[in-house]
Figure 1 (cartoon, rainbow, N blue to C red):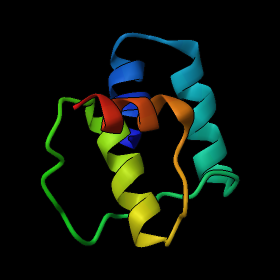
Figure 2: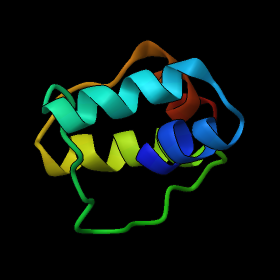
Figure 3: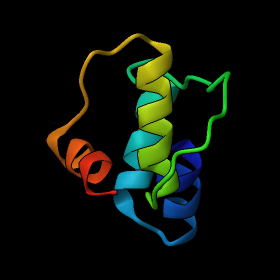
Amino acid sequence: MKEEVVDKGKERNHSDAFLVEREILAGWIKIKEIKKQIKIPFDLDVGEKSVILLAQEQGAQSYSRRNLRAWRRK
């Protein structure tokens, strides 16, 4: 998600991209690498897929309602 939010956001001069980058550098936001890539059988943005994969790696038991709706829709 860093690439999507910070890197591309800075290219487009979005002020929130600079804010998020500052919080990453300050240690408030942690960057986690996804260790295991799996195929998600429906169309989601890269950021949404990353959140689902990271949540699975971290043992999360639930996802946001928006992502749950996407899982059920397909």
